[in-house]
Length: 543
Figure 1 (cartoon, rainbow, N blue to C red):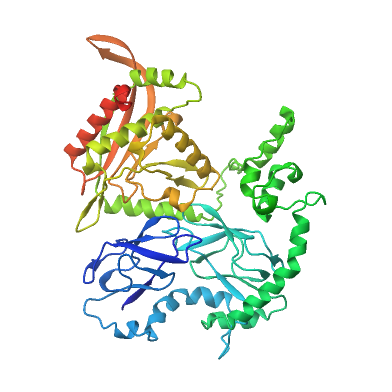
Figure 2 (figure 1 turned 180 degrees about the vertical axis):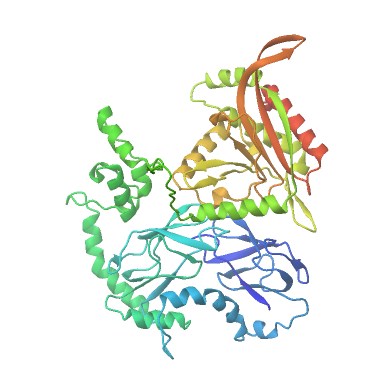
């Protein structure tokens, strides 16, 4: 049965997308997970993969053309299948997507009233697609409750995607009439998340109309009602933003974080509109002239709770508990499983003499305002080696192999819920100090769950380093669509033979995992030889 593919929402603010490039043409076979097209959003150009298998029967938006979110992008089905009914907007065009969400909708929405219509001024808010690979979201925290007044721009909730926990702001003003997904609950993209509208609206009627696929009525009336609401709330907003009155103007999320960290909002300078205190102001706030005891307490209080030690269990008694997997953990399991069982992995290991690297790093870090880690040196060496060995900087596409002429190195970062891979764009063009600064910035964002999808997208090669944990050697699973990943171990002091003499040396083992479909053994070995030459003679990376 033919499947309609609509223009996806690839960022939280995306309203329209432009097809930058089609990677499939009409008549091509499509497998689930194949990249169909590159779509330019308001933030970045992102790859869009197919969730269906079959033949590409129709392309609805040509290269270079733009269209609103949910416009007909393509149709995938069986070869020779009649799709005229879908192109003409027949009932079949809606059936494929309605079938997928009907079970979720039935749980949250009441019976359909024939001829029901969403009242003017009421907005149905659905689960947003906050990353290019997101198919399901989990509501981590609601920052508004039913009955609360909502202004356009207010943060409604924190939503956990497959990559990060992100703030979701309201695009509408009114009253939060209904919450469709409770905290901790998960639902597919486009499932009913909330309803916002005038106070006193019959929610049951809206739920029934939403289930029936009704469109909001009388948009002009909606704007009028919204305008009147803005008039009534404007004086309150002005009062709240006035420092002279003693009131503090801050976003709900900023207030929540400030309470958790023990930060006095009256001491924080807001960088938002009209001096409004927002999330980043709290996170970057540093107490002035505070004693060490006073500054330590809030930090300790704000630190995430560590997993509790295993509870006491009497001898001979079995005991266990089940913890719900996060969206990130489920996605890690899915992606790594797909990578391990679809890409034929093989591994190559070398031992690198790090004596010169240690001496060079020490000299570099003696310079003012400069800090470079061994991992920064490895990342730089990888980027330069990839330019000399383009076969390693590739992506397997089935019928074709994509040779990436740019170098975007992903750096694996461990976070509380698993692993994320922020990406250094055009790494080969960066200096060591630029790499160091950007890695520290992105790693900090990752641990605070502030990475954006754009900052995790587009890697052509990945580096994973467990050396800081004392791990001397390990293997990694390839971060697809990359063709290789480098595993970096610890620097170990040990006896080595130099010029026929046993001396004390410092060595580090690195292991390259390669996809045998794109990288042959000899190619992987040559890449490692070049990498070794750069690391053992760091001055060559500065030339």
